[in-house]
Length: 88
Image (cartoon, rainbow, N blue to C red; front, side, top):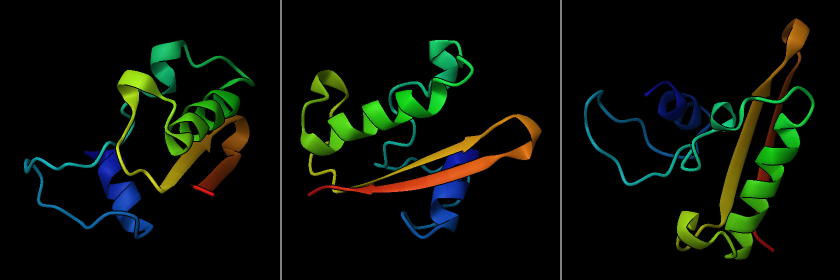
Protein backbone atom coordinates (compact mmCIF):
# COMPACT_ATOMS: atom_id res chain seq x y z
CA UNK A 1 0.00 0.00 0.00
CA UNK A 2 2.83 2.42 0.78
CA UNK A 3 4.15 2.12 -2.78
CA UNK A 4 0.72 3.00 -4.17
CA UNK A 5 0.54 6.08 -1.93
CA UNK A 6 3.97 7.23 -3.13
CA UNK A 7 3.11 6.70 -6.80
CA UNK A 8 -0.26 8.44 -6.30
CA UNK A 9 1.51 11.28 -4.50
CA UNK A 10 3.55 12.09 -7.59
CA UNK A 11 0.40 12.05 -9.71
CA UNK A 12 0.94 8.83 -11.68
CA UNK A 13 -2.13 6.98 -10.36
CA UNK A 14 -5.22 8.18 -8.45
CA UNK A 15 -5.36 7.86 -4.66
CA UNK A 16 -7.44 4.89 -3.47
CA UNK A 17 -8.90 3.96 -0.10
CA UNK A 18 -6.86 1.37 1.84
CA UNK A 19 -8.00 -2.17 1.14
CA UNK A 20 -9.45 -1.46 -2.30
CA UNK A 21 -7.99 -3.45 -5.12
CA UNK A 22 -6.49 -1.62 -8.04
CA UNK A 23 -5.39 -2.47 -11.54
CA UNK A 24 -2.05 -0.72 -11.21
CA UNK A 25 1.11 -2.79 -11.31
CA UNK A 26 3.27 -1.22 -8.62
CA UNK A 27 6.49 -3.24 -8.20
CA UNK A 28 5.09 -6.11 -10.22
CA UNK A 29 8.48 -7.82 -10.55
CA UNK A 30 8.82 -8.14 -6.79
CA UNK A 31 10.92 -5.01 -6.35
CA UNK A 32 14.64 -5.07 -5.75
CA UNK A 33 14.33 -6.83 -2.37
CA UNK A 34 13.37 -9.99 -4.27
CA UNK A 35 16.76 -9.74 -6.01
CA UNK A 36 18.69 -9.44 -2.73
CA UNK A 37 18.92 -5.62 -2.97
CA UNK A 38 22.51 -5.69 -4.28
CA UNK A 39 24.49 -2.58 -3.37
CA UNK A 40 25.11 -0.46 -6.44
CA UNK A 41 23.11 -2.64 -8.78
CA UNK A 42 19.64 -1.77 -7.52
CA UNK A 43 19.15 1.24 -9.81
CA UNK A 44 20.41 -0.69 -12.81
CA UNK A 45 17.97 -3.53 -12.09
CA UNK A 46 15.09 -1.03 -11.90
CA UNK A 47 16.16 0.62 -15.16
CA UNK A 48 16.44 -2.76 -16.91
CA UNK A 49 13.00 -3.91 -15.77
CA UNK A 50 11.20 -0.68 -16.63
CA UNK A 51 12.90 -0.37 -20.02
CA UNK A 52 11.73 -3.87 -20.95
CA UNK A 53 8.18 -3.08 -19.84
CA UNK A 54 8.05 0.10 -21.89
CA UNK A 55 9.49 -1.70 -24.94
CA UNK A 56 6.94 -4.49 -24.58
CA UNK A 57 9.58 -7.19 -24.08
CA UNK A 58 8.98 -8.09 -20.40
CA UNK A 59 7.27 -11.40 -21.25
CA UNK A 60 5.10 -12.63 -18.30
CA UNK A 61 5.80 -9.41 -16.35
CA UNK A 62 4.55 -7.22 -19.19
CA UNK A 63 1.97 -4.55 -18.44
CA UNK A 64 -0.06 -4.07 -21.60
CA UNK A 65 -0.18 -0.50 -22.78
CA UNK A 66 2.59 0.70 -20.44
CA UNK A 67 3.63 4.21 -21.47
CA UNK A 68 5.18 5.68 -18.31
CA UNK A 69 7.23 4.10 -15.52
CA UNK A 70 8.73 5.42 -12.29
CA UNK A 71 11.74 4.15 -10.36
CA UNK A 72 12.46 5.32 -6.81
CA UNK A 73 15.60 4.41 -4.94
CA UNK A 74 16.71 5.45 -1.45
CA UNK A 75 20.34 4.65 -0.70
CA UNK A 76 22.96 4.90 1.98
CA UNK A 77 23.25 8.24 3.71
CA UNK A 78 19.82 9.34 2.52
CA UNK A 79 20.70 9.60 -1.16
CA UNK A 80 17.48 9.54 -3.15
CA UNK A 81 16.91 9.14 -6.88
CA UNK A 82 13.55 9.20 -8.63
CA UNK A 83 13.46 8.60 -12.37
CA UNK A 84 10.47 8.77 -14.71
CA UNK A 85 10.66 6.80 -17.95
CA UNK A 86 8.45 7.38 -20.99
CA UNK A 87 8.00 5.06 -23.94
CA UNK A 88 9.38 6.43 -27.21
